[in-house]
Length: 183
Ligand SMILES: CC(C)(COP(=O)(O)OP(=O)(O)OC[C@H]1O[C@@H](n2cnc3c(N)ncnc32)[C@H](O)[C@@H]1OP(=O)(O)O)[C@@H](O)C(=O)NCCC(=O)NCCS
Image (cartoon, rainbow, N blue to C red; front, side):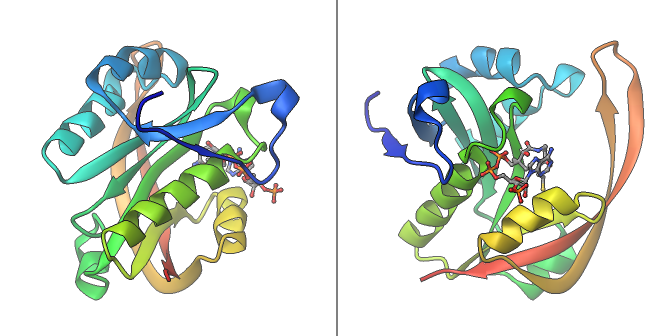
């Protein structure tokens, strides 16, 4: 694909998955993205793409054999939570990292995190941060292995998650903010 970078994940299973390509989302990708990584009534990919078009975010997609298998967002305007942003203004935030269940544990999440770090370094930013749900120790283990340290900052987010039947679930998430110094 034009202008794409190939990356080799940590536990690359070449025979089962093929080659991973990570690139910024383009408008024509949204339909496939929603089909393979559905967000239901939230239509989150389209909303994230609009922020990319405004220049505030980048929406990255990991493709395997031209199928979207994972995605994440980079916020270039600093951490989304105001208290965290006030404490760490020169920090790109990695958010909404997800890999399709059937493609997990093969290094795609790691490859997406690396792609975020490369883009942040290319913009001259000193650090990347991310919030991890206190109820998600598996993800926290991944980030800590990749060099992300706990800052002691926390944030609380309340949101509604719409399931495939159209039912809304009001959720409260408490995140710990982790940071990695680049360079
Ligand atoms: C977290 C996630 C993006 C990792 O993607 P991945 O491609 O499986 O990641 P990698 O293969 O590079 O690394 C595997 C590591 O991911 C973590 N992991 C595995 N399954 C996970 C799951 N269901 N939820 C969260 N983390 C998970 C573990 O730390 C695992 O390493 P280990 O079990 O060997 O210690 C993916 O599991 C996912 O989409 N989870 C659901 C959404 C989520 O929790 N996102 C993180 C928000 S902060």
